[in-house]
Image (cartoon, rainbow, N blue to C red; front, side):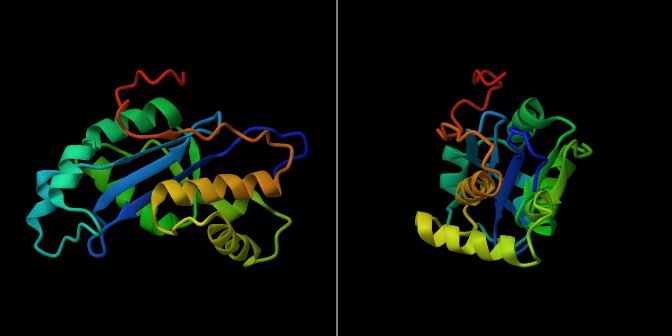
Length: 184
């Protein structure tokens, strides 16, 4: 459990990947005020050279027209969470997907990932995962969609750390991924 009196909202992150190869398709993370930023990711041309790459539920046209470039995702994440620890439900998968984003440009990741359940020392092993699964059903959200994953982790945090003020969770649609979104 976070220390008593700590009203800060941790940074939560989730990355959706294709079935094979860990191709990052969509990403979402929380902002310090509790809003959620999410967008589709345009695949880099080098990612598409591998015949085994899966685009999941998306078409290449959809990712290219509605997504943003991997470099824009990196820049925006840097603006929001430089040198921060972000919490995730799937550390290994999200680390692999983020590594692919950064490796595309020869950059070292500037964020660390940690399991979200590590925020709650008082929970017995498995309780966080069980509560997370129940909350997906309660909220009618889909696991593996990054904006839903982040919303569930944020809601679960508010339940497990009641001193945290509920945010105005306005979804971010990716159109403002230019560093000029007024969250500074």
